[in-house]
Length: 446
Image 1 (cartoon, one colour):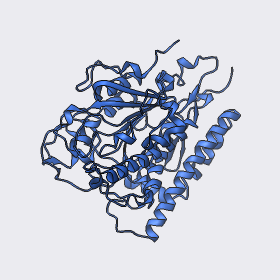
Image 2 (cartoon, rainbow, N blue to C red; image 1 turned 180 degrees about the horizontal axis):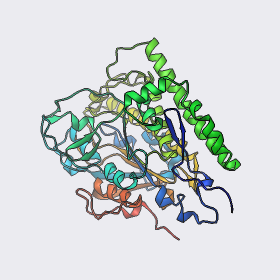
Image 3 (cartoon, rainbow, N blue to C red; image 1 turned 120 degrees about the vertical axis):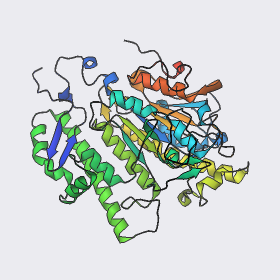
Image 4 (cartoon, helix red, strand yellow; image 1 turned 180 degrees about the vertical axis):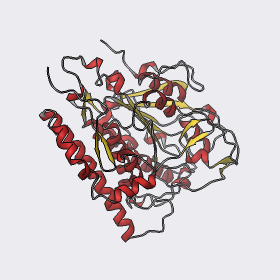
């Protein structure tokens, strides 16, 4: 009852470094109901959005029944986390028409109709992640985090009269303000754990120290002396995760210096293998959520019209041409394999989140993630029957192990509105929404 109380915003400060801590027991005042503290689910809500390009093969994605007892091949990697998952079928993005790669990406989080232009007078809509960031990101170190897997330098016209910005930017702070995403793990790491200044200053500070954690050893000892054994274990585990991520980034940078590759899509210093790069970017999201550095993330797992190949899974063909399958069974099988590969990376991330205790549950319980594409059938470039997954949300009674199939096409904006309301951003409408998806969550009982 007389234990020391720490602020949820406590930082470990060192030379050019400031590391946020995960939620500790010592951050909850003694004899205080958790619902009235930082442990309250409504105050711990986070939301993330994962984008995959060029639709899917519905035959290998769509569950047959209303449960996930038998997962189709593209979703099979989610077997261990299906109790935290809902598959949603028959949503659409009417404002993404006429069908294109550019509007698939631009409408996914905005549900808005992008202005058709090849110049700088582009106009889209404020994306749902930025609506969330204005509310739940106001008190965090970073209001939101925008990530991708490709370093993009393309400008001008990219797709059927649409400026490249529509494919490059998943998040928009306003209809005229696209937000750049970051694919370089080192820069993301420093934005999360560097103390401040320009990216150049943060990179210089990182190079001057052998390890970020070495500069905060005294602070670590001081904090650990103020907390109990359980909290000390949490701190040790969290800091060890940071050290491991830093080690992997350093190895990737060393590998890129010793084995330079003429790959213009890959930023210098990222792991050579696509899966290793993606896992590192997912781990950075986990650390950012665990340390409450941000509560809103968007992640473009691959870019629309990408010609990336996946020989490691038996698909040496470029992704984009494969998706123009013309009902060719061989090409459809390759689309399903790529879908499965991307889903496997997401599944690993969900498992990691579910292993991190927090409050009265886990990090996954107190977070929501939406995964999917703005395109349905890539051969037709349509925006109907989109592949959509929602994961987490147990703290607000999200019903897992479910396949929610709408009888009539449902605006994706209805799902966006529902998730916003659940993370404490009450709105009556979003973009072209017509209501909310009430069946996604059970009523919360007090």
